[in-house]
Image (cartoon, rainbow, N blue to C red; front, side, top):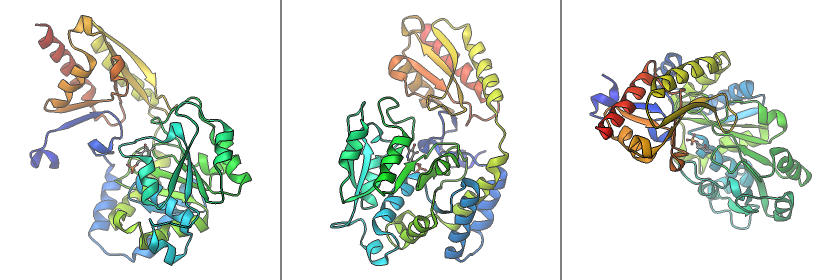
Length: 369
Ligand SMILES: *Cc1c(COP(=O)(O)O)cnc(C)c1O
């Protein structure tokens, strides 16, 4: 029995992705061992944070790094760091940034909700969000013209949650930042390339430890030594109520060390999702295909188009039935409003694709009988 079942909680089949609401990632034995060993021992935390910074540096190509309890904390901590630098009195004053350079410029189509609002995370760090342009169209001029002597940083959100069309590119926004001598931050929470944005020249890049990295509940920031020292110092300020413990840091380090050895399993994903689709192909009213991730990551999901006039049940109803069962089956539902459900193969344990196919068929049989 799983620990969650021993609590009397329902078993969850996660075909949805690295969702905080479902516990983000299930970690490897190596990462779990690191969590356990660290939890049962003591360490000088400052020393460990510096060491973790050096490990983050090694795996990102940045000069230094700062562990966090998640990417959301990474946004708050980086925001505070560009406002306060390493000045302890200012650090202890956050999030009250009255009179300081505190404006954080964000393109309107990227001012999103990832489970919580980006803008709120910025405000927690003492930042004042300056939204530029329109939800579906931002011009370079909008960004340039929003810069004032109060601008603390430009923040780019690289995410499938953001509007993908009509936004200014990372390159354009970064050039504007550099021309104006303003730090450029990228929230790359769910991205799987931990070197790309540092290589492109971003000053500060934020990642989640529980998403592509498949680590424990954690995150990290990477960038120049100056900024990362300022970030780590925030743990004497706004970072304190979002601290990552020794076990989280140890698990994060283990996950980083393991990441380069992770196999590219695109073929296996496609194979498993093809099997699922084949099994559903006979069902009247379901049209199945395989779609690559909309943000271009190496994720291949099964896409199930539900024709309610033939199945007798709409996509939202089917989703609801799957989620309320036991085991609870969670599919990806970004496009449920247009009748599409997706199965994400990454978090699925072995054979769970068969359980999903069977359960969908069971529900449709029930509806149609
Ligand atoms: C998931 C996500 C976050 C938050 O990451 P956590 O590690 O869960 O705190 C922040 N920004 C974006 C764009 C995300 O997708």
